[in-house]
Length: 244
Image 1 (tube, rainbow, N blue to C red):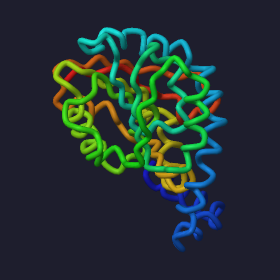
Image 2 (cartoon, rainbow, N blue to C red):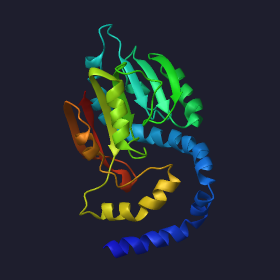
Image 3 (cartoon, rainbow, N blue to C red):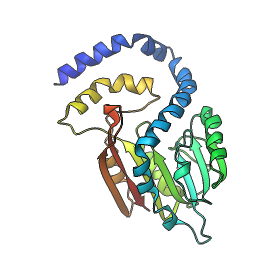
């Protein structure tokens, strides 16, 4: 099986040679930072249509974590286009973090469409290092379709725990590796190297639930599901929340 994976990876690499060449020349990353926000703006519309019920279920208890003032201080890591905004409680004070400044145009459009929220600021930074966000300063951190592409899940989760107040919660919804005995996992392995290049660092084979289990939260509520998406490779999902 391993030999078949390697052979098919080579074949896929040959087919995607122009992209891989640009990557080797250091040009693809620059191009990807420009086109990926456009792609994600379209993809998240479809994703929200298919996953709206799960997102409402996931974010339904967000108000329970509001601070003494009754307002919810919320940090979204890897905010992208702001696709989650419509699921947040009215009056939430939202701070956004993303390493790609080219999302700003789409993010501000989402802010304009969701006047029920109080937008605080947009910080250009990776989730692994967020010195602009103070220790224990937020009630909730949200991360959706992000842990697949960060350089270090462990460091991101350490930063999440740092910025959360005691008793605060981390909400997540992520695509993950399929079960190892399935054909889906086989094709995830085959396509993963090229997929990472094309989709701005996204990994198909990460077992993100293991990083969450090791992160040291006092409570972890996590569920696996097969998302009703057209792209079979990203159907395996986890979602839930963890309490500091």
